[in-house]
Every structure is written in C-alpha cells, then in structure tokens.
Image (cartoon, rainbow over all chains, first blue to last red; front, side, top):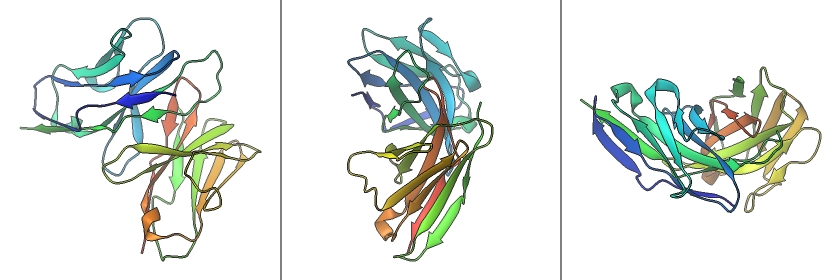
Length: 117
Length: 113
C-alpha cells in the first residue's frame, strides 16, 4: 500500500514570495506522483505529475515539483506566488504499472496555501 | 483532458431520504470511475471504484448497502446515498481517467438535515 504525508497543514506567505509545499510518500513499488489544487467548493485540478524521466516537472500556473527517490519526496514549488494561488493543495500517489488500467489515488491530508498582501 | 460533470452540485435533504448523485464523463469512455468523499477541511477518501457493467468495489469501512453505485454505461456512474443521515453530509467527488491521469468532477455538496 502507498501513503502520502504532507507535513504542513497551512502555509502562509506574502504575495510575490517563493513557496515550497512538502510531500513525502511511502511505497514498496514504483509510483506515479501528482499535485492537485482545489479551490473552495470545487473539484480538483491537476497541477503537475511525475511518471518517469526528468525528476523536475513543470506544471500549470508556474508551479514545478522535483521527484527525489532517495528521500521519497515530491515537493511543490513556485518562485513567486499570487493572491489567486490561495487554495488547498493535495499531493497524491498511485502505483505505476505497465497497464492503462485506472488505479485509485491515495491523497495526502492537504496543505492550505494562504497568500496575503 | 477529460471533462467530468456532476449533478446536482448542491443537495439538501431530510434525514431518512435517499439522494442520487450523477457523474458523467462527457468526452472520455470510462470503464472505471472513482467516488471520493471529503469532509470539511479534510482530504479526499476513496469510497468505491465503479466498474462499468459489473459490481462496484468498496473500500474497507464503506457500507455497500448504504452507498449504492451503478455504472450502467461508459459515460455515467451514479451514487445513491440511501436513508441519509446528518453524518452523511459531505462533499462527494467522482473521477475518471487512466493510470497516468485522473480527471475530477466539480463535486456535489450534500447536506442532510
């Protein structure tokens, strides 16, 4: 089974400052990793994902994440945040297998990013 | 990516009644759909995996007789909360997709009075 830990439940940051949201995972098999963003009363939107290849993954809205296998981490970063980035961010993991069959996601507990002026 | 809709977006019902929530995949044929539940300020918890043309697979601790799932076509899955109680009040979200990407619906907010 897989598990995901997001150590920070809330991250306050000033606008235009850099931010890092931490995510660590645990798994006995290879995994795919994801970051999703959720705005109030909405579903989840995919920010970025790591499947294989380059460990630095770039996503939408200026976000990027780096896969670190030795530290089992997949931290999300943005060099300069905006007020509109205020939202809940979820890290998720699923097993990486050689089939296209859909597999359930295991989510972390989420990190609330609060951007202020 | 795939477009996923849910209906209704909001529902308020009396305790003891049943509520049906629809999840539609508008441009993706989904043999599998997932149903999640999210309590306020908490993460998404998988309830069940909906399989087209066969029985759903429920996660441990989820009552299959209370949360009825029907996946009659490649574009529609329904979740029926039977005999709803206030503790069933939550945000219900469905998703579709393959292993490499899951697309989520906008969610349905259920409030049981």
